[in-house]
Length: 147
Ligand SMILES: [Zn+2]
Image 1 (tube, rainbow, N blue to C red):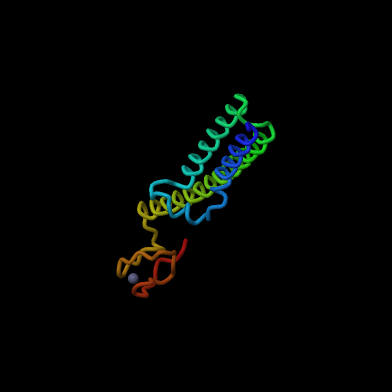
Image 2: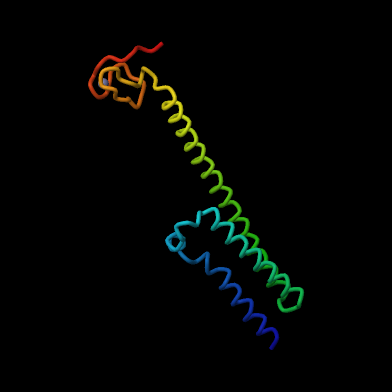
């Protein structure tokens, strides 16, 4: 009888572990609240996996789970944690890339505001061209030539 209970517990845990993997990815994305970043979500999910791993170890030490089942479940949790870790590393790199672009744009805007270059600013109509040009994009007047 204890074997049957152990098997039932293992089966339940296996379904519990496998369920997030079986669920379609898009569903999870749609359920994400707006203020939760993917990075925070990966971290939260990793913490849940760690907690599960701790519980599993506790149950194994208490003799509630067979060594074989413990090994399988433990491996599954560790693989999931590793996957989440890789995913959050990737998300972190991506957000750093975005941050770099943002800072670059801000720096360019600041430069443009501090000293409007004659290559951008039309002396005839005052239009500020988005690129250094020879002729104004608004009125066609000739702009100051490049130094
Ligand atoms: Zn102009």
